[in-house]
Amino acid sequence: MSDVHQTERLTFRHGVHPEEFKEFTANLAVERMPFVDEYVVPLSQHAGAPSIPVVLKGQRVKRGEIIAKAATFVSVAQHAPVSGTVESIDLAEHPNGLLVNAIRIKADPYSAQTVDGKKPIPWADMDFKTFITAVQTAGLVGLGGAGFPAHVKFSIPEGKTCKYIIANGCECEPFLTSDHRIMVEYASDLIEGLKILRHFIPAEKVYIGIEKNKPDAIKALSDEIRRQGVDFEVVSLKVKYPQGAEKMLIKAVLKKEVPTGKLPIDVETLVSNVGTLVAMAQYFNQSVPLIERVVTVTGTAIKRPANLMVPVGTQIKHLIDWCGGLTEGAVRILLGGPMMGIAQKTLDVPVTKGISGVLVLTEDEVRDITTYKCIKCSRCVEVCPMYLNPSLMGLMARKELYDEMEELHVMDCFECASCSFVCPSGIPLVQSFRVAKSILRERKARS
Image (cartoon, rainbow, N blue to C red; front, side, top):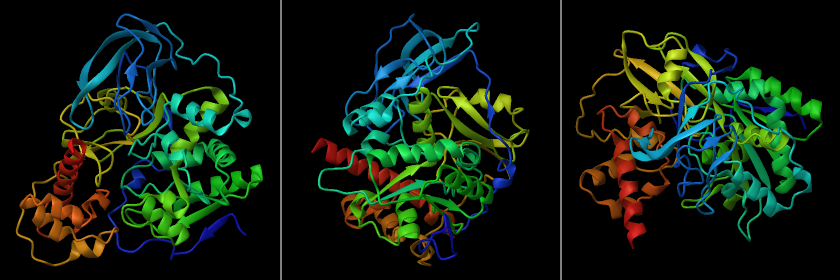
């Protein structure tokens, strides 16, 4: 079988086709962000319980040193992104708009900012439990945006089997190119990460799913597969949003449907972001935990778009300054892409492990939308990749009928915003679903 499988039919039903805007940064190599004076490391950078600090104010720390340990199984460690001194452990702005506990570190201006050791960790000699502990200790989370702890995803539940591993390199969100550049520039690390994962989870097949608008990434990984002599398969997928959602990716690659309320492992599949796999390879090969990530800084209102390797905890104002600053027309900054990104109220928020992009938009691109009554056009139903009824759920959200929304499977919504994108009445559907899901989770937590 060829290591590249291409067909226009490899996709999922429904979805939308927003303009890509990848041209700003798709061909720009990753450049290293210079170190700055201060870093803010939130203890909540992942799904699950916040990490627990193991350092004190005034303590000296080295780059790569653990500064917070995992609180529970669904939690990960945090590490110092730089060598320096702990200034405080206090509340700080988070990209989600909340104030969360964070460790503030003043960088040592005289440090070379290297990670001690860099010796390979003998993963082949580990048993599965030791491997899972190592992944948790490394602070690895899904770098595609959700921030789900990688060791939890890799812990296959008893009674379940994993026949398929899929590396997710779709990056279907407009403007963003961080995963694209990772696949082109770190192809060897990506294949190594897949080899490590397959050693502990011996899947029958390993796929790398990439949208066909990234031919250089497809070539780089196909060449690396041949060079390393592994039986992985690169799958070229149709360009469509949200192709990068793991349930949509599974549908496209395997033609399998993940049942409502179920997880990919229920169809014998594990999906991992390409950045996560590269970070895992770098940890085991160089003893470097997750202390930095690639971030795309882009948009029509940024003077010099770039793909940057950024230490976690760097405030976004420093990324914008390094990219030449904002144009006069800049009116909105999103962390993430235009479909699922979160608008920011301050430039003091730090880059967290789940932030893949900083998008700056102009006044022409951001306009107030007048909301009208639903005209029952059914466009939202036609594009929803989860086959939900956004129109009906939106009506129930306005009436606060959250239990009824749960019966209509609102919890299956992964907030891709396709419904809001096509709504001619300008109804903020996905925002109302986020509120409903939050309220339902709170109710369950209290019961």
